[in-house]
Length: 124
Image 1 (cartoon, rainbow, N blue to C red):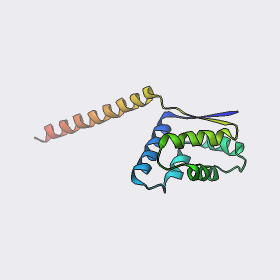
Image 2: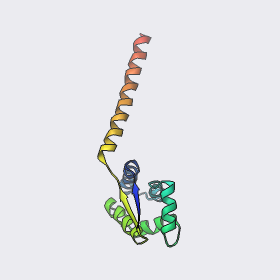
Image 3: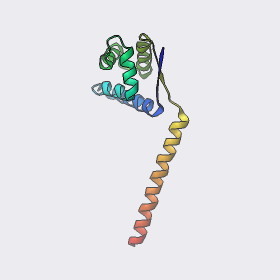
Image 4: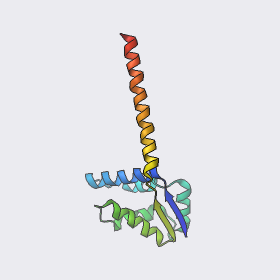
């Protein structure tokens, strides 16, 4: 069995995209959002494992089987769909990694504000 782990940032992006689609009722970009959660080498591995050999077709099947109103149901549907092709799909949502990235982003935002304050002080 092949194991595919979706990294934390991609997991977070997928969850946010699905949540947005559910809230808005607009599922047009969901196919691309699901495909974007996989790295190129993971797509190659998946396509070699899939009976039809086409990830796009697999994603279409997953979306059409999904009820359209529950994030966890979609993720479970993805896991079970790929399990049928001997692929163990795992979504890594390691909070520590995401928290570190958020701290870094907040640090960058703080620097920008400090730089703006310095520019404004010089202009006075």
